Image (cartoon, rainbow, N blue to C red; front, side, top):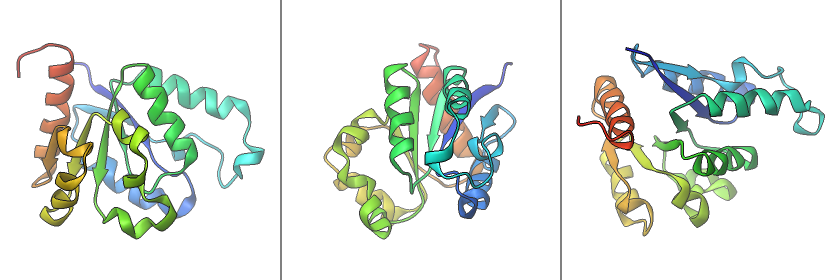
Length: 167
């Protein structure tokens, strides 16, 4: 079976590398993940980033069946989420911390962005309660993370349903 191509939507600054890698390592061999920080220039400020970098990332999204979103995320990430929505690529928000922790980057406040998200994977029950209270996200498919295998099964099931396959 062909691997499912996944694009990671996450901050690419060095302090997020370990977090990004850890999240992607939770997916099993069914998934091939494009992790932007592995392909983008190291520690280059956004106002000095070359167009080719964005073009490479957009090509990676175009070749993906799924986008995995890891908070906190910034404005460029919202562009990627919107691009996925426009290309009809499923995007799954991975929630591992209280969104209020992020201050002015609290993604709960971005109603248009939340509507673009197809599903939510949630790390624990207290975070599940936050998602279940949200007027937009509570209606999205969601999965309480009990195991890495369950996470992979949830994502594969989303793709299968989107493609009209019985799972």
